[in-house]
Length: 620
Image (tube, rainbow, N blue to C red; front, side, top):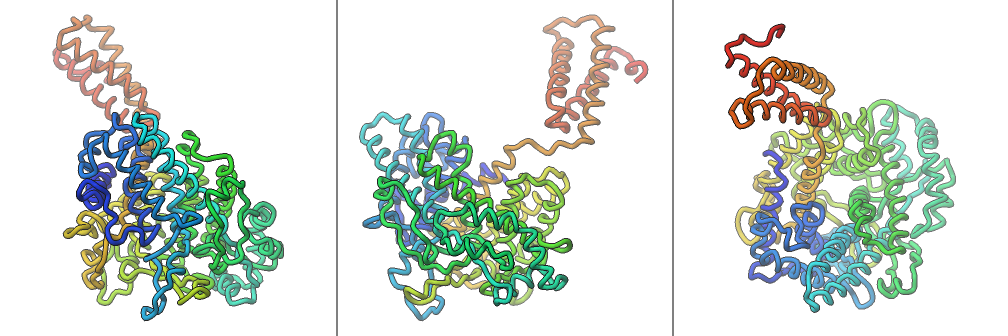
């Protein structure tokens, strides 16, 4: 199906509003409050487009567009929607605040590895990187929304509620940023260890010896190793940076699944410490997870986006934390981008599926995770070279291997990517109860998002066309997975609709999938909002046509009597002049449009000549 971000987002909004504002009041349902991640995802389905796309703004009732208001009619009219959102957001902040500090529980998203065992309340209340990252995005969206809406309402009670919500949202944002810092980890390993051997095999790909891998690793990561050792301090154990200085050891960096065990507290101002409460002790094993690293990398850029800076949403202390997170964001992208492209021949990323080094888990999902980080890095450095072209091929292969663009076989194991999904053991969780796991079911949505991001980056017509066609195929697959009956109609995720042999999934709406599809549509809007690719060949042709048209138009005005201004002939001459002027204006940015306009001018000039009984211009 064709990607139509505005229409698709309006359909999603209508479904979310119908599901959540059934009787005009927000209803969390039975699942509300059971996971800070799910509740944040649900709110972001509405708030993220409303703060990222001007046409979807809800913070100024006077500018709310009619189709947007119609899609949210169950939530009220344009003047009621902002106030209702303030109430819902305040309720979210209250639900996910403990006695001392904001909470970031995984809740029902956590599961026991052994289905016969029950997780303790303490385990379900553990924070998770998904919630930290999602809270950064949600809190910044909320603060931006409140900053505008506060200047548009005159009600004293509403202004008072906005001020209270601002304080609680800002405190939650700070707590999420501190938690992200304390979840970042650098895992240093000996080459001879099991994990070191696994990383060596991954990088060597059977073509390089252990010694060659170590030598190339030392050369490739010397500068990055120095940056981590000398610059990364907040929330990272100093013993790690000491170990990292040994160049005969390998390392990985990224985000663990939660606060790392032994991670030192981040020092903050006394007033901030009171607002965010006591910093919890960490339990996670100090090992980077690809999935949680990607999740963190997705949320952190919102801290230094143009909107955040223009609206001045961060305090001075939050800006300091944001700078520390940005450094980790850049380091992590550079590290995994280099790992994905390690060596001179075939990339490790091109050897699908990817195998994780510690747990030795193998899946196309991990290949997609590494590709996602590579996409982040390509976007960061605006790469349009061979790296991008090779990444396009990886995306196409992942779509095929995930049975999104290819047919299924009987008992196809690829269906497991989508249902029941790929599971991750959460190392360290066993210290507070039964071992826990985390399940990812968003392979298709993640693949669509990265494909659209690459499409926005590509300045090569052939590559962009391949990516656009791939994105349309993935979106068609995802759109078929919408729920078609019941309370969640129009939302996700009915996997059985595309994979009939997969198990029937019972349960509530998947806010995880719904939110990720929403993100994809916001990314698609950004894609279409940028100028089209400029073709050098078409630009030359357009300039040639404009030159000929301008010459012949000058000849027409010189040789023929000036027509009466209001006559049909006079109107035609004015139209030709306007089209020619516009073609000249567009030739640099839209050479195809300029070409079409110039061609039209030439055709109309020829018609004028023939209408006078001529056979065309002499010499033409």
